[in-house]
Image 1 (cartoon, rainbow, N blue to C red):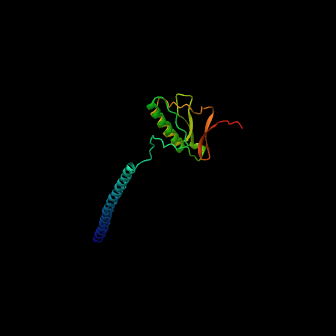
Image 2 (tube, rainbow, N blue to C red; image 1 turned 180 degrees about the vertical axis):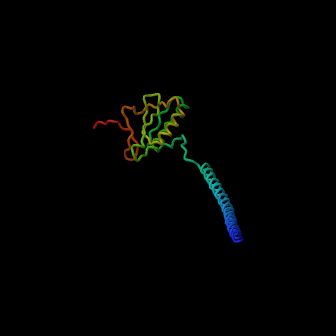
Image 3 (tube, rainbow, N blue to C red; image 1 turned 120 degrees about the horizontal axis):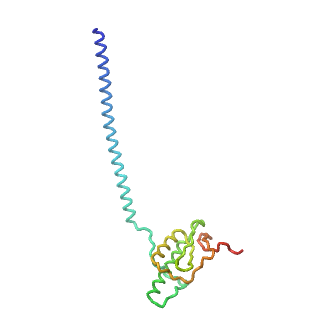
Length: 179
C-alpha cells in the first residue's frame, strides 16, 4: 500500500509541477503580449500623428489655384471688344481674358478621352470650346460665377461638333467633316 501511496504522491507532484510551469509560461506570455500590444499602440499613434502633421503641412502649402485674372496681353494679341458701359466692359474684358487663359492653359491632351466640349453660354444656342477635363471644371466654376450668361457673340454654334485631340491640343471639329 505504501508503494501505491508513494506512486500516487509522485504522480500528483509531477502534475503540480507541470501545472505550475504552464501557469508561469502563461503569465510570461501575457506580460510579453501586453508589452507588444502597448508598443504597437504607440507606433500606431505615432503614425497617426505623423499623418496628421503631413496633412496639416499639405494644407498649409499653397495649392494650385486658378485666379480669375487675365495675363497681360501680348503685342500681337487681339483686344477684347469694349462695351459702352465702362464697368460692364471691364468685367467682360477680364472674364473673356480669363476664359482665353483657361483655353490656352488647359487644352493639352494625350487622347480624345481627355477632351471635352464645354458650353460657355447656357442661355444662347451655345458657345462651345474644346478643353481638357481640368479646363472644363474651371470653366464650369467661371460660368457659375456669372449665371446671367457671358454674352459672348463670337462663338462656334454646335452643329455637330465633337472634341478631338490633334497635335496634343483639344480642338472642336465637325462630327462628320466633308472630305
